[in-house]
Image (tube, rainbow, N blue to C red; front, side):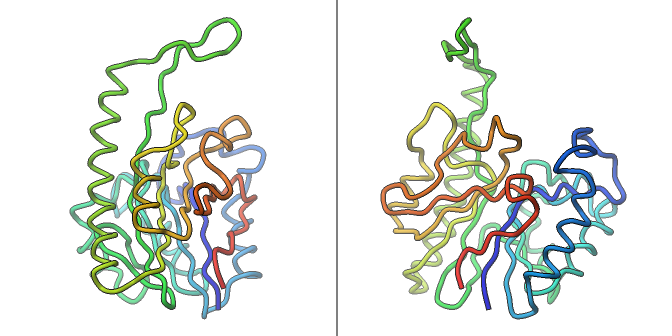
Length: 247
């Protein structure tokens, strides 16, 4: 019995592929690679958290085969929201949980448990530019309007995360793992509202995805920071092998 995590499946069995790069390199036939790895690694007693960007579908009707692919994987499956999950409005999480009851669990504005650990999650957000560079490739400025917009999204997501953390703590859970789709910090930050909240609630781990390619894998915190373990679980980073979070 173990808890695993991976993000960014970006399935498109019924929808238009919006990232042509998914046809090449580590992304080539990634659905089959991931399926085979899960079959080798994950049993019906395990729990798999899928950390956002599940499907390119614009709505549930375009995601039916993608959701079926996920449901066909072994074990318990918990999903968090990603920035490309157009089928999932945060306000409709309850309806999704009712629709997929006994098959999938959608983590947003609530929390789930694994043994004595509370699993808490939200999409998150961080400012990703555009940044302005000098001839040496050093950041000398950025789009301030885009930064202001991102700040509003960060505040909204932080409020959602706090609500779920407070609910878990009120129910007596002392051990907490936080799942974010976006990294907890951007390339300019050493800390953020999300890292400070993780410290406030004494989370054991923060698991995140979203960052793709060698140039982006190390944009945020990895390893132990202020006593909390931070891990990137983007599928291409993990080569489509889910990361074991805890036994």
